[in-house]
Length: 106
Image (cartoon, rainbow, N blue to C red; front, side, top):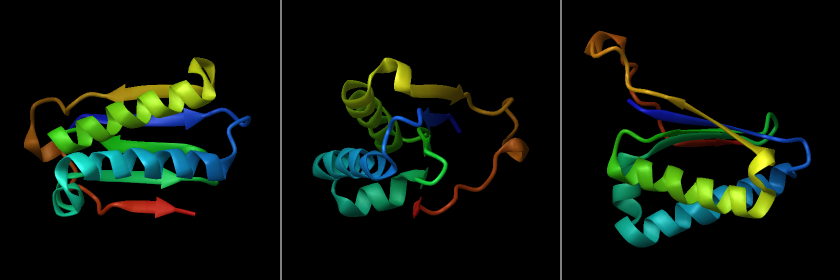
């Protein structure tokens, strides 16, 4: 499971961060449909801590990460968005955690 972890500078308003993420989610739903996005994407948006995590193991998740990255860096600037990539586990399925449900923490 490849995961992208985003951290945002304090200059990024928490509500704006959520709005940007929801716009990216809407774009992905426009491409794949609501049902497929619900089945094939996993993410966690934590407004209070200004963080977001997107599981990019599926095509839908990868596209969500790409679109969100594009929107966020364009809107807030490269320096306000820190992105860490957590590559797939060491090849052993026993190291992988079960995917969590989609959630947005307010």
